[in-house]
Image 1 (tube, helix red, strand yellow):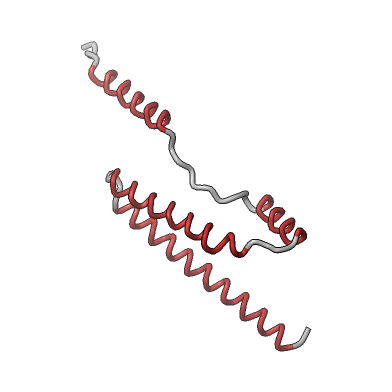
Image 2 (image 1 turned 180 degrees about the horizontal axis):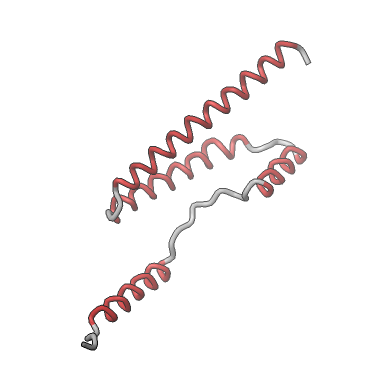
Amino acid sequence: MSQTEIQTQTRSQQERVKNLSELEVTVDRLWEIAQSHSGDTSGLLHILRVLESLHKRIRDDLFQLALPNSRHELFNLLRDIETNGGWPHIYRMKINEICKYLEQLDDEDELDQTPKDK
């Protein structure tokens, strides 16, 4: 490997590390924004929708275009996905989970309203 190739690889690795650091800063900022909407269901829902939309754009417009062209490269990608946490997924609450949460709140309200022995 030539000196130029080594320098190019080193620069590429340094750029990746810088990009990951920028991503961590962005994640921290997003968390701060979400915390500032604590208790605001509509605001938090909007944030989740924006994140879901970004996830879809990255997947459809960038990731799919970057998929490997050979079986060997695809195998390596799939192995990497398996060993490093699986496929990225945005979990959505199901309606029945929300209903169970509401039922728990109702049960707690009923317990709070029962007359207490004196």
